[in-house]
Image 1: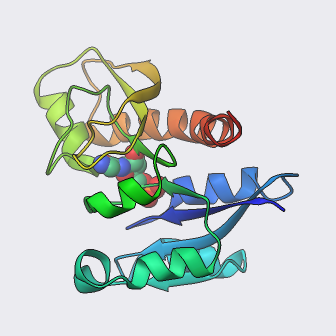
Image 2: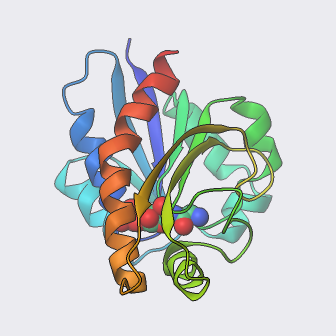
Image 3: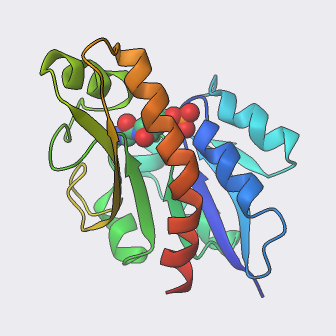
Length: 189
Ligand code: GAR
């Protein structure tokens, strides 16, 4: 039996796409479910293109009701990957999936993390502070934003002329290169 993975994503889903492709013919890991809090997220189209079941939820379903818990359990999900997911993970999820939830953050944590620091906001802050480098952090998820133990980091150099968009491109490149492999290692460890 394969290890079943659910991906939570809120937006475009380019990371989800890379992860889906990487595990397409994997002998022991299967991307079984895509979940999103955003009905307009392009990641849902990607899920459809790859014929992966997907589910949209709202705040109540996620934080108050136990619907998502049931969906994960009914689908036999063993591992959770956050790929551009913008909501805080409820404590009960962290308890139900101890060391089985990973996130990617588009900066070198502990810098540029925490509430409100996501997507382009991160890159804009990096540019504003004239940082000479940025990068990615892959970490275990706990009940606080971006504070779980770090699994992996990779850096990219920035030029003084780089815009937030340029930083996003460099960071995305690192994400695509490393996230699927780090997920694989974290699952099979
Ligand atoms: C990625 O860069 C990811 O690191 C970031 O959102 C982007 C999603 O892109 N995640 C966060 O900011 C989480 N705090 P994608 O939808 O194209 O994968």
